[in-house]
Length: 267
Image (cartoon, helix red, strand yellow):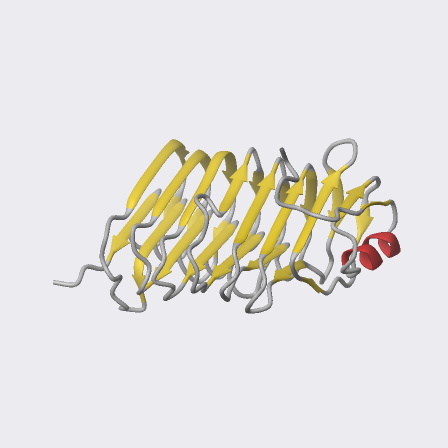
């Protein structure tokens, strides 16, 4: 059941900018249903649990300088579900998910469309970070049936994932995604950049999708993956990759026009 991990769920409809902003920042409201296209100028960070759904299918959130930021306190769990929305024209990216601390975290992004979002750092559409000291659930991050078009950032033109020094396994799944014309302007991963720092072990990554015309200024025109970021050795164990899809017309200035995979080994 979709809300099996929620208690005291409150639902509210958002049809205007003020509705969305006030409800997003209201800690007692866990579910927001977006009914109309909404332009967001300012949204603060949100902790703990929240679900955001498009009511009739792919309502547009035009973000301007805003973005949706979900960041847990060190001791808290963080659960986020976002479904059936279009995110466009964000100048700070669209969504940031920071599941740090000792809490349990679960992020689900379903049937989303990201068009023309830009970040001055990493993750043109989605930025994911975890530095947790507790075991993460299997597939703590899942991205399903989503479209990324013409997004850009320094690294990870569409999606940037960073996991650092947790001593726990990292597992994520991307299914039936479409990534086209995304760009890493000063780094790696024209569509997707995955960087796992030292400490993580027994990692599992599953990526499936269509990758067309993405470009990286360094490595990995479509997908870049690095285990052992910044020269920090993983503790050991097994890193499993399941990567399948259609790749066409992707490019990188240096290595890996489509895919670049690097694992630092302690010898």
